[in-house]
Length: 213
Image (cartoon, rainbow, N blue to C red; front, side, top):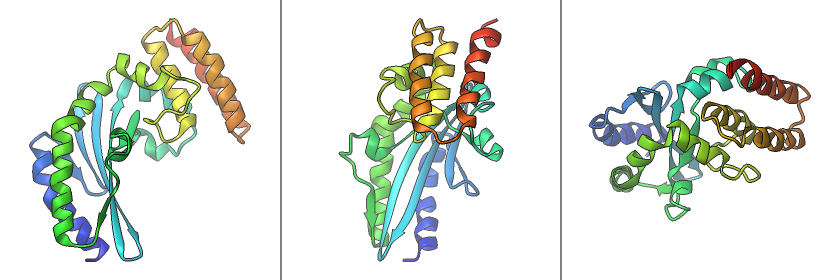
């Protein structure tokens, strides 16, 4: 099967299932999205072709609008992506502790079987995670519990520092000052962009002196 044939069949198989849970396909973005009172949830199936094999990975994520409206003013990313940015995202493989590997597909039958496995994952744990993970207390836990270690729920660790600090401010955690220091050190160590530390300091000032008032 060609890549386009795999993609069409993938959407044909998954769309009726996800629509039952109010996730609707946005074909121009290659994802399913469900609006929530605090932002949105998204499910992103990604097909990649390696020689004669097609690999399917699925990411699940959510956006907390309050966090993103603040953080996106300061992060270094294309402006066009700001309205679509998710606060956290993780692949099924990562979420399962790599017990579920990315799905390798060669035939239509394999794709259909894989879609049933994906549906089972969301019914048993995926939807539950999405429904509770984007509240501020849970976000604070996911992003800031281990500030010195990479966070598996954010692919760009630089963005994690902005979102983690914003979430800490919104939850009024007593670790805010400590997180400022830790994330500042990590950001300076990892970036090669002299503009980045300035932006991070602007976020800290905003959260500390303006937003808190």
